[in-house]
Every structure is written in structure tokens, then in C-alpha cells.
Length: 159
Image (cartoon, rainbow, N blue to C red; front, side, top):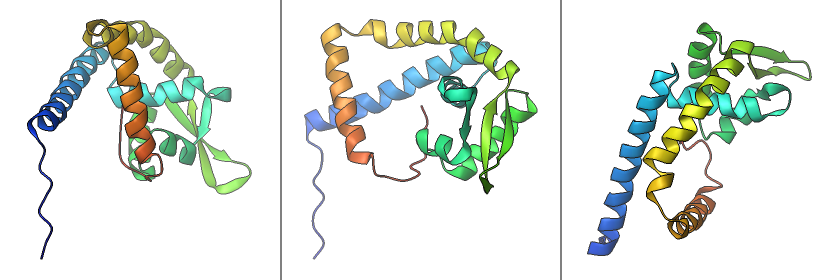
């Protein structure tokens, strides 16, 4: 006999649905603001990773893993970013099958131009709505949930 589902109680349901609605609303608002800078949220996420890496380049497999995307999703997204001149790819001299995603000068300008507006958007739509205690609690909650999923491969998560 199949085990009965453990349904969410009213508090659990309120928390879950609140989290979903909050995450969708905040992501949509930040996406709208980034679009004004000519970037999508995934573009920004990739550019941040590359701009913060040594030599402003990363092995494609490390980049995909770091942002929780499949290699295929990353490759398709980089194709679109390459057409806009934001990134380039280089072969990996130590591994014939490997490649690097590289930040171009145009990509660096794009992230530098977008970053002040992006942080203002994150503050306006999220950070400034919370108290310091709420932020600390949310950070702890996030870290707890992330730790549960840390071993999951290629979850397809984007921030």
C-alpha cells in the first residue's frame, strides 16, 4: 500500500507559497531593471562569475557547475552572449576537450555599467524591505537549504 503524502500544514503552506511568490516577484523586478541595462539575469550571473575569476576566464565545466547549469544550457547561453560580444571562448591547452569562457572588454564594460543599477535594484526590491535580524535569519535559512542540495549535480538553478 502506498504511503499517504505528508501534506503541508497551514504554516508550512503559508511559508512555501510566500517563498514562491516572493522569489518570483523579486526576480521579475530585478530582471526588468537589468533589461534596462541591456542584460538578462542569466547574462549578469555569467558576467559576474567571469569578472570575479582570475584572469577573467573560467573553464566551461567549472562555470557550469558553479552556477548550477547543465553544460548544454551554458553553451547555448554563451553562444548568444558571444554574438553580442560579451564573452569569447578559448581552447584549453592542457585538455583538448576543455574550453574556457572568457570575459571580453565589452563584457567587462557591460558588467561594470550594470552593477550599480543592479545592486540598487536588489536593495530596492529585497534588502531594504528586511530588518538586519530578518536578513540574518534568511541567510541562515538559505545556507541550510543550500547545504542539503550541495551534492546535487546539474540542478538547472539560475540566480
